[in-house]
Image (cartoon, rainbow, N blue to C red):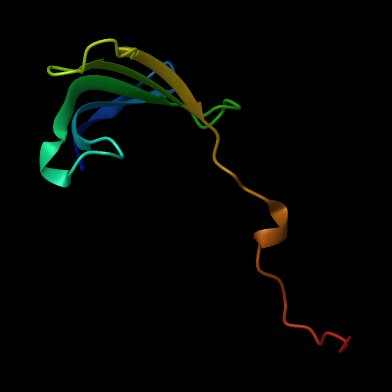
Amino acid sequence: MSIESVLFSPSKTYGFRIAWFAFGDLGYLFGSNQLFNQGKVISRIGLGVRLRNDNLVFNTLQIRFSFFPNLPRYSSVSNFNVSGEQLLNPDNFEPGRPDLLPYR
């Protein structure tokens, strides 16, 4: 289960629109030999920022800092994440005029 709260900035800085966000995640882990009530709840909380500029190839850059308060021992996680998102805008999905198609 995840929750996120976003605060959008009303202005642009060097062509970038900025959105600050806070998030929280909950998950339930249990092994294949364990019963459901023997599992463990894993949580994550964090903060991040999204920078968006429509003139760039990757128009959204996201930087996240997270903290796992009750992580199992010997777990390997990244508390810092940077990712980019490119929106798909294929030309063949633009609507055109109606036409008859031959039956095949």
